[in-house]
Amino acid sequence: MTEQTYCDRLVQDTPFLTSLGRLSEQQVDRIILQLNRYYPQILSNKDTEKFRNPKLSLRVRLCDLLGHLQRSGERDCQEFYRALYIHAQPLHSCLPSRHALRPVAFLTCLGLAAGLALLIYCCPPDPKVLPGARRVLGFSPVIIDRHVSRFLLAFLTDDLGGL
Image (tube, rainbow, N blue to C red):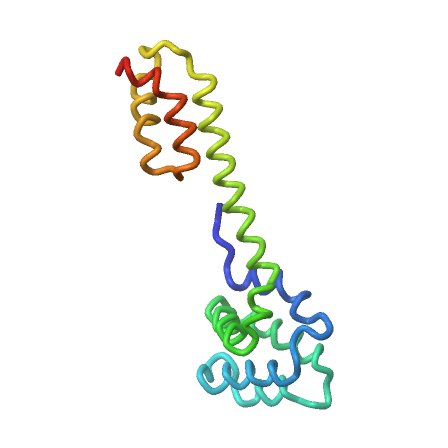
């Protein structure tokens, strides 16, 4: 599985960030000023004036800013997330792209545990068939969490005597 880039995350988070009431005008201004002051190569003075124009609505300015960052590249999107974390940390922790990463890790571990359980269940009792697999499974509780290792050790105690 490939890791999600900051540009991909920004595409995914844009509807969330631009919805009404998520970011205040002060927070957006602080993010824009940080990107301009610390990283003038990301936002020039002209771009900063455009994105801080009070004649346009906050949503339009924010959409323009996010579109500009997406076109600019990966590093610019990463710096936006850093500025968002600094100036709107509670909002940063609620981003859809951050919550999308958690179930993937859980499902990966669940799939691994299910595959291991299936291997143990379907493995024939004859130790000559897969002697190396039994040894590896015998030492795997050292790596696996203690809750899983209790069940694995209980299942393998009879088979390890023949090794």
